[in-house]
Length: 220
Image (tube, rainbow, N blue to C red; front, side, top):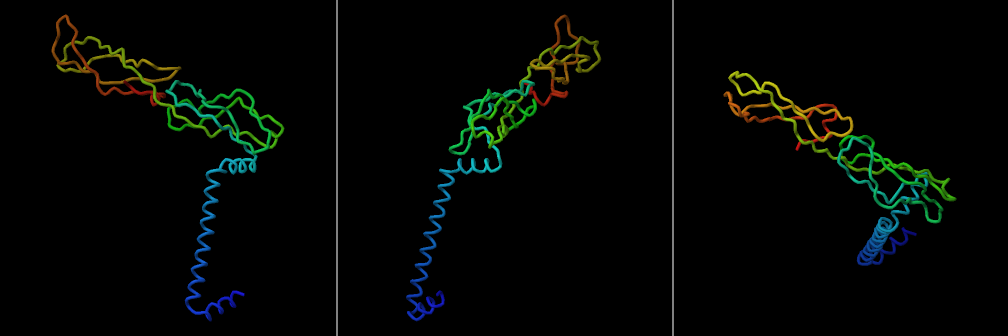
């Protein structure tokens, strides 16, 4: 049939063949436009349904409607949830979420977009047996806690011709929990000379935190 159409088109002359090709191109353009519009419709109007279908196919149901707030480091894994608890089951299915949700970070340490797991929620409803609940997928950040430097105290010393402090103590204020954090620095007197009854001015430089939990804090 295609050979017969091609022979007929050739016998009709080049103008008829050109018209046929143009009509075919226009038809293909209409098909592509329809396909593109359909894909856009799926993306805009049916993405949730497609996601639900994919989840049911794998037997998984995600918790929806919840978010986790960022927090300042507090030495715990506790996380604060916001929003309204929900789940994206398939239309027509009777699935409920029961319980009081709570959330925890994967660990206590400072970090960006840290994984958070929700607990305390169970599936209910007549179709609950068709799903398994996934309680991961949320994330939030833990930011460093501020430490105030205090306890900068220097002991008197016998003149030795330099401005270096003989001995001193440094103590960070604001630690939480049982965190192990130390503070080091370089103490220097304003000059090397002996003073009278008045205390001599001194400064500390190169202050730095150390210890197992130092990365969770910042000096202010």
